[in-house]
Image 1 (cartoon, rainbow, N blue to C red):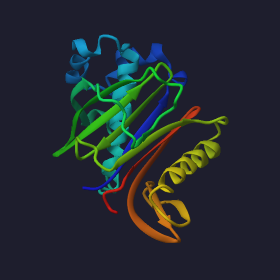
Image 2: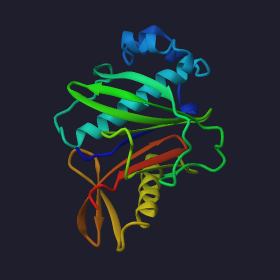
Image 3: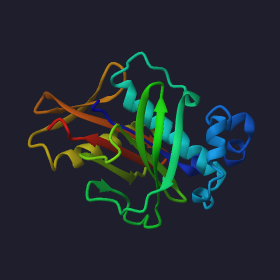
Length: 218
């Protein structure tokens, strides 16, 4: 299954006190995921950040699956993170992250949604969380990136996310690139007015935008 899924969260936009209330986080985390937080690898991660980390993973998985399952509805409790570990490997050249954010903590893991098994990689700083999901845990041909923006209106966020994606795609596609939204919401990549098979995903939150795309199709 070739697809793409990502999500980004501006941590300045979240209510940390509300996040830590059982009434709130129990709608996102399963009981097993609440226990998962107790493992030593996550000791340095505040619980509120853990909740939003898993939210971003689940949102990314939903975007990944929605492309091929148009009828799918987002239910975070039904998308289950089964494992999470520290990811020590340095970010590859296929990734474009903010140069100033050199204190990035990286996590990886496995999740399930029904009979589907997917894998995620997440990047966390004190300011933002970005997660990316793929069907292959090696993330071959998957390119991702994060960038800040100046204006937080929806139009500015959406436009900036598309611009960032196009800039990254220009390295691989020769021609005029355009991004349009499908009838179910995922971005479609056009080159010289012809639709490509490149799977892409966009996200924005606060002053941050992010992208993911999968080049397996070319």
